[in-house]
Length: 151
Ligand code: ZN
Image 1 (tube, rainbow, N blue to C red):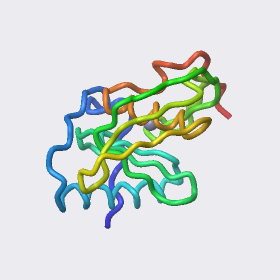
Image 2: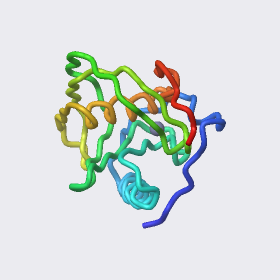
Image 3: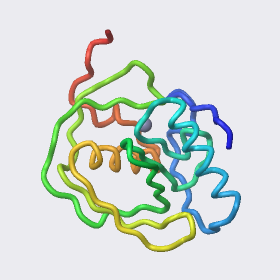
Image 4: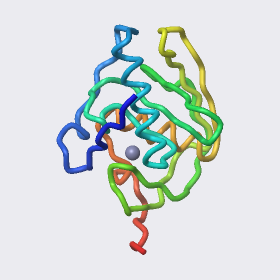
């Protein structure tokens, strides 16, 4: 495993649409393992492949009870709304209030290509939306209602 460099929002790659994963091979697993190490090293809750320079539809999340790997996600359901503070490892030190669905459910694939369903509320719902946005070249600040003053 290796820690990869997390790109900042001024890098073009973060504004591009990622391609679906079609091969579930060792190269993908290496990416996933490296992303997990990179996420933990940065003390974040979510990381998308474009943030480490790979334009593939892959993201990971970790809320303290293990890494959740998400490949080729598609929304199945969105319900309600929530507003809360959001930040991004590609925008260090910047936080803003975003409006997101209160509940989301996605269909995706695991590292072997098996179909999986993941759902969540609160932070997990926000994280799923935030990371899915990265796969479409969207940074959370495009959703921000109000940026917070820097500390
Ligand atoms: Zn982000």
